Image (cartoon, rainbow, N blue to C red; front, side):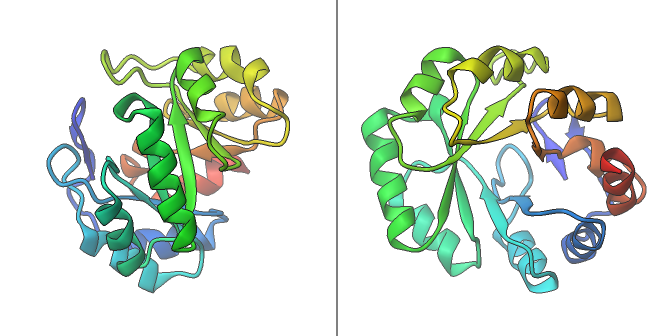
Length: 201
């Protein structure tokens, strides 16, 4: 719906309709922002999306406390996000253990080599590489490409942010990256599901 760097992305925000449209157009998973302060998200958005479709839902939020993981489970999330830039390693291990205990998957997000090294101390196989610098908001797909060699083959790599064209998708697929977290590109489209279909067809 909104972002700190771009403001409102979508005025007419209907989570259930968007979720169903994504599912019909081939999405493997939904990412739903629940952070209110920076992204104008809400738990109710995740609940509406979850009720509308059958694909897994990631709760995208700044997870810093185990309580948030119990909350994620309660509102219907299938996975949570841990952002290495926001957490100490011992915190991440505690939060990951809590999530796995509750049957939730964990996507751990990194932006640079030191963060990736920390992320590899976690058990999760889901590794997100954010192409957006959270300090400057600058975006470059080179971030994902530069960290590829550090990631063990058994990790499932998700490239996040900056995927806007079919050339971007091809670039990543040429480097054996087949999981994409796309937000703004679809939220700015009149029909998000159709935009998804067009980007990945």
